[in-house]
Structures are given as C-alpha cells and as structure tokens.
Length: 342
Image 1 (cartoon, rainbow, N blue to C red):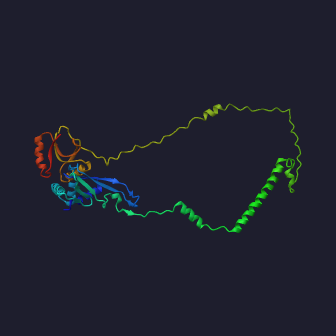
Image 2: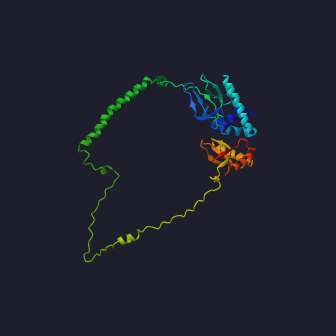
Image 3: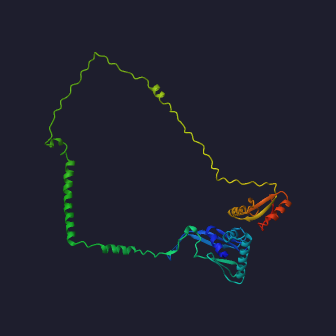
C-alpha cells in the first residue's frame, strides 16, 4: 500500500482542501505568477499550501481515495490513516519533524504548537503543469548623458567650405526678399492695375461684337388662361396611411429534459434513518452514494444536519424497532452505519 503522503499530494492536485482525520487539514490557495525585482526570477502561478490544525473531522475524501486507489475496503482505509496519524503524533511529541513528501514538513514550535513549512519544489496547480522558475539577467540601459555623447560622436564633422556656401545663399536671399516685396506692394497700393483689361493681353483671343436682342412682341388680342391647381391636401391625406406590419411567428422552444435530476422527497413521518456517512463537501457525499449503489445498497442524500454536514441515508422507517432490524443487516456491508433520529 502506498504511503498516505502520496495520496495527500495527489488529492491536492485536484482539490483545495484535504483533511487528515484527528491531525489537521491541508488547504491550497491560488498564488499568481511573481517577478522578483532584485534576483530577476520569474515564478509561475501555483498553489500555496497551508496547514489548519482545527480541521480534524473526517469528510471521507482521503479514505475514499485510498479505497479506490488501493482496491481496499473503507474500514481498512480508516485504520491505515489512524496508523499514520499515530506515528506522526508520536514523532512530533519527541521533537522530531514529520516530512510529508511533495507537501511539506510538520514540526512543533517552542510553545508546542504544530507549525507547517510547505514544499516549494512541487507545484500542485494543474494549469501550470510543465512551467518552472527561471532567471533572466537585468537589461542594462545607458543613461541620458551617455546617449547624448554617443549621438554626437557618431555624427560627421561639417567641412568649412560647406559653411561658406550656405552663408552666401542666405545673403542672396536677404537681398532678394525686399525687391520682391516692393514689386508686389507698390502696384497694390496705387491705381496702376485698376484700368487694365487682362483679356486684352492675350494675343490669340478674338473680340466678338454682341448685338442687343429685340424685345419680343406681345399679342394683346389673345386671352391667357391660368390653370388653378386643385387642392392636393386630400390626395396627400389618402396616401399617408401606414402600411400593415406583419409579425413573424416564433415557434416555442422546447425544454431539454435529458439533464434534469429528479430527487426523491423524504417523508417527514419517517423519523428514523440508517446513516452510512456524513460529509462536509456535497461532491464527496454524491460519490459515496454512487459507491453504495454499486454495492446494491439503496442510498440517498437526505439533507444537512445541524452541523452543516450532508447526511447519506440507506433507509428511513417509522419506528425504532424496524430501523434496528434493518441496521443489523446494513452493518454487514457498512460496519460504521448508525441510527439517526430525525
């Protein structure tokens, strides 16, 4: 049979909490990726494992995992867990450390309290499978002064002859600007351009003489009939009726009943139940019901008790006598079954 350490590590890969009865619970919390600003290390996302000594109630998760993995019975799995807890408690009392492979180490502090140091080499987050921590060297960047010095060093020196040529161009441009300004400003401020016909300056254009047109003669002997338009308000009103709107018929959608789960209601008159187990996690209770049904035992979840645990019942009866008679038969397959009064 494998060690309990291996089963705890396997359960932490798919669950956020694994309880070891009478010892404590290992709780996994999601931790995002991290970048160390000094060491320049990149750490992938993972699960931080912490230990809670107050989680000691058996939720059946670890025992059922051992039953399925080792092909053993539930009572054998409980005895195996109790043996592991007894050895771990004895080592802690002697001052030794209890190492749980791929999970962490348990030890007692000065005040005799259980402390836990997680194992950082194992990543239980399935989404980060294959990712490992790596280190990248820091990027060295030049300062502003070094970049300016480097920019000036890369430039070529301007020759002296080229500077003289540029000066001559600027001098010629400074002399030409006043002349151009005078040629434009003087005609605009005087009447020199007002009496000039610019069309006469085109040598290829020909002048056309425009003759005045005679006014048309009006025959006053004829009478002119003016057609008065009819009132169009009625025609407009007839054509402004809104067009009929047709609505598409939508067929009703049929409900999908293939995935509906029907739960059997419990008769409140039946006060005595044969309980096979109680679980804090509803998913574990559902798995246990399926395991009992594979053994041809009628089982169902009847709700939660006053402690918030999901109760798995294998039968309900009106009288205590009937329940005790069936309890003896049930304990042949489930030795830990007991009678529960509603």
